[in-house]
Length: 166
Image (tube, rainbow, N blue to C red; front, side):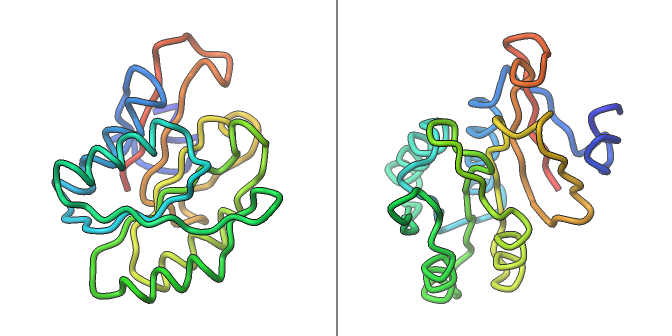
């Protein structure tokens, strides 16, 4: 209830996991197997928890994995993201982009990406492991469908995380 209150969501939308990797895996696999996602749009600089799972789903479920361009500084090319969503508008898409890059520290413009996904009827997942406890996220104001978190990044115990499912 405390975690749900922090993100302005219902407690029934929070699922505890063994960490951020398990949360990312659960979200991506569930989106493909339960929600019919056909295309995962991500970047090549995502955490392996996302990239390896996307590759697994490509091999086992024929999910298309498409990579959005990043610029020289590692920022997501939002125009390219919109182009990819337009190209795949007849397919069910999931955009999976991390909020704070775990290696270079770049911040994704979360609100803007949420609006782009909403505009194109795409689901949006963000690995927020590096952001939780450092940047506020109100999931009523920012329409993200799924987030993943790991407790040890915000002074909790190792081996505990959670997934949020809208």
